[in-house]
Length: 376
Image (cartoon, rainbow, N blue to C red; front, side):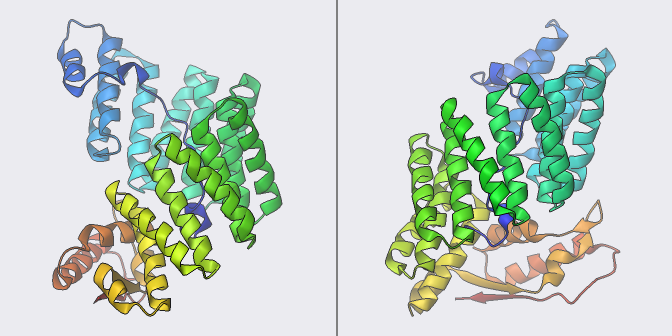
């Protein structure tokens, strides 16, 4: 697996509103539609929702702003459906930034509105997305409740793709609770449906999750079989993140088997691809694995040439602060390190210190904080 935290290892499906009608429309055209007051309201709202969606993963703060424009317009005209779309986009914008407290607020606002609208499918999607937030907060009991509510609705509607995704998400919960019999059952059922509907992305994800379970159980031969099947499909569909993740998983298996040459081959490829697609979470994990291999092989120059080793106490990531008085958390810490790793060590020290002071604000420091950066 790419990380010791199981919750970060398994594929999790979000059920989101789509804007397929705008998929091939460029951003200028969408702005033109939005600014044309002679266009019908729903046409303009579709355009603004499309604009917000375009910025969602690259500039989530901008996506939130544009979604708010859509929400305000929808609210004034009484378009509940479009208000719901905007709220969902805003929730996603916070989830992407790991601001789970505010993501939950907007998802629950959306759920309340969906109850009023009465759209069972979107209610199920809201249940799922709320479950995903609880999952990322490691509140697995609450996550399971919402995932099962979502799945029950999807089963009644017969929506196979969402049933498969729901089964996968519940499998993730049981995996995190170390109930591997149940998790394997749900993953297998999910895989079966994905195969029935020829959903290659879903097939690759399910195969990878099953591989993760075998790895946890130290059944490395079976883990490799499933990871390699997943890798082949991810390459076919050009899912670069999936390829980078699975290459790393295979490399880590070979590392555990002390097959360091094979491990190095896969992990270097994983690292380079992760860096290329700016998958910061994967870059961090691959760097760690490569460092361990170089160190074990006595190739200190290689380790020193490519990476910096960061050691830190949990005081930094456990410090409360920010707008919602929540923990800094490991994801923010890793993202900060990856954003500053090319700066000189003195500037890194200043940024790390300043970031924590700003985060903590007037909050009391709860523990000793230690971060050691060593330029190797």
